[in-house]
Length: 91
Image (cartoon, rainbow, N blue to C red; front, top):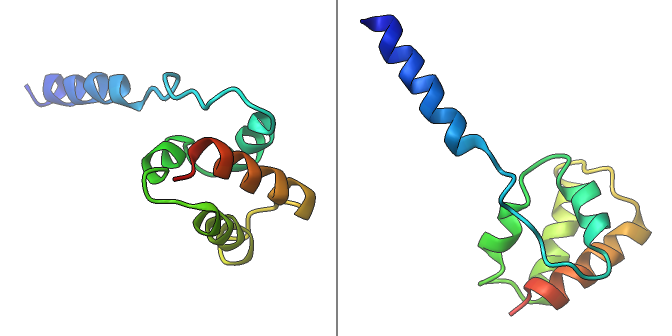
């Protein structure tokens, strides 16, 4: 009985873990966002935060990821990421 419960839990969890449905807007800089941001976390955070963020918010978030979280994002890529997020997911 316990084995069946564990198996059901594992099978149901795999359905929700699939993130293949999350597709960012196709625009210049998208590949830079996916290649840099998607390494550490799901890109669904972008869509979830877009309702709150203006350019300054995206700048602060990208800078926090680099300076506080240690994201290995170069300054050229940071500019592209901020531009992409601001234009496509900014308020």
